Length: 401
Image 1 (tube, one colour):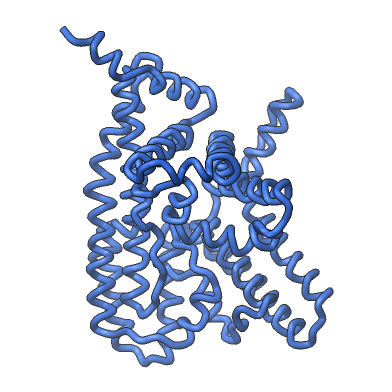
Image 2 (tube, rainbow, N blue to C red; image 1 turned 90 degrees about the horizontal axis):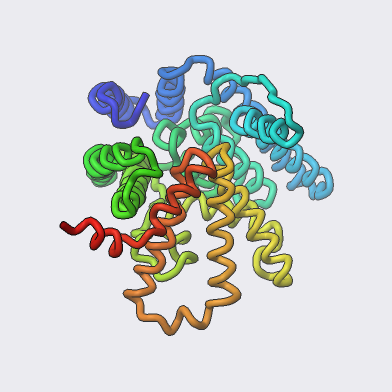
């Protein structure tokens, strides 16, 4: 079921709001859980089985971590945490990356493997990251384990965020699951934000997407530099309005049912640097990698070489998180390179550049990155970058009658 679909907007959501309003407060989490399971099962009922197994495993693992922490069994707690994280990552790798890794290995050794895996469950990246967040937060004492299995299941499955985020950390949602209010102001604010997000997604992103895909459907070697640039710009704006629109819808849904989720986008295309861009773009994903990967590896409070290694791990994983394709790996390494240049080479120089030019440069670099991102393979990315490297101004004068 799509959040922008007629069945959701005109049937599922109004019925959910009405039921949520009339049931006693103590039963509201159970109602939301049932609604979320129905939402998941709408597309593929079999997804309930795998998500259910994940919920059971992570619920008991989190409970065990809380117990070990209270008994100060540090070594055993670390082992249980590592095992829990490994199990969640293994599930994600199998469904999302196994065929990609197998084919990549086959290409290296000259063998064509024939292997298929079942279709990945809805929102597997998001509910896996949510589960890992829970295990880490409980292990570190940043949040208490939820005693009620239904409350934990709701954290994992809430229909507002399971398909495309934002990635809400356990420490930020656990207390809200146990106590929150559905007020007239929160409902009104949530509905307005939901409508705004849907408008951004359907009207603006939809229109830009139509233009972009018309350009992408052409032979890349035959399109002009101006057309190629327009395609890259259309995609950059489409992606922003599509993703930020969906985030607004998810945050709006949260408000309707009493949850307070942080914003996921903060006008990233007016950033003064790529570092700032990534503090404004998909904020919840960046915060997740910062808190659960970058800082545990040592963050920036290490030697320069170790810091570069930590950043490399984060950006390799960030690239792969977006999809099982080498283009995403290259895209992640591209941004790693830009951030390293900003951090270690051009840090002082950037401060001397006027703000307007810094915004233009940052936007330009982001657009270049998105051309790699939307490419089907490395060859197409290289051809597209070659087309946009042609001077549009020179081409304009050549085409002038």
